[in-house]
Amino acid sequence: MPILRLLQGSPYGPHDIEVMTKAYAEALRLLNVWDRSSPVAESIARRTIALFSSGEADPSVIARAVAKEFTLVPSCGAPVGGRFNSAFAR
Image (cartoon, rainbow, N blue to C red; front, side):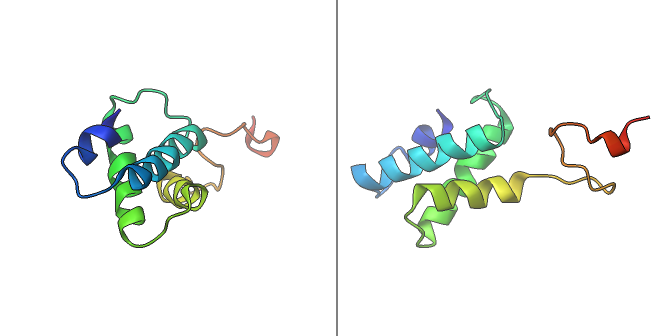
């Protein structure tokens, strides 16, 4: 898991690591990222750590913030990875 590798040797205690690990797992789930060895998963881990380091300690808040940052919306307004809206169907 990238987040544990990134936290190795860090000054964070067990409780902090547990909070970040929960936030990371929830962010991956919200973003439908299943390959934890992907570069995207590592970017999500880095952002999770950064948000925790900025003072946020609620794993759900961190996860939703990370997911929001990583969610892309194309110019047509349809969410990426979501169900295809019938208004856009041909």
